[in-house]
Image (cartoon, rainbow, N blue to C red; front, side, top):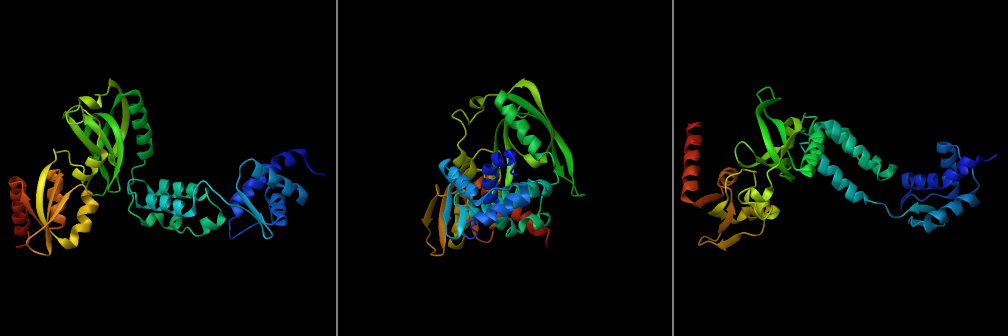
Length: 327
């Protein structure tokens, strides 16, 4: 005797079975679906009832394709390629712990079917990636969201790594939070330091013991340089390492072989002109001097800073000091 409750549940169970076990390459016959209904849910119904339920699902807007070889769920919320992108993003995010990464990847896999999961090997290799050990990341995100919503300041400990490879408290911070930014595979809190009276960019995975303070946050429009809000495009190109010094116009000569890297770091809103030497180009852009010094050191064999002279002197001194270490 068929159970009345089971009949009522059959519609949603058939949808769940098609979602979990079917795709274009793996259609399911009515017999396949009947077996899964019985095995997994103890529901026994006739094939005609399965056909009627599939028709009802189609009428409800569920995109199911049916043919001689069977039925399958044709459209999902995410394509498998999109899920792979999300998984790769989680794996490359050093600010997410291995435990949280594995949990997120498992939940992403649940958005597809068993065949997708069988092809995802990342779940087993997540511990091989360089990950933070700070478990407070997601708590911090929720806390910051709440503080931004109620326009309050936050207080937290800011930490740095020691020689023991563990985070240690380096300072206490009282800040007005504005936004969280993912930049260079790092997650930053962009906030106004109430003590230093300037904008700061603090790594979320270096923050612990965060609390919301019962003090109003400084409005963004009152922060010098941000009267018109945040220009995210400029922020990304002028501050590649999230230094907080004021961006200035910088001119340098570079080998043509690193034009790709220049555009990767600073975007396309820069001036690139021919140099007298065929293998070189002149570049003019606006950036943080501190960030540019750091960047130019990475490409020291390919880049020569021309102006401002103060930055050129800093580069010269840094190179001389560095050379002494190797003499």
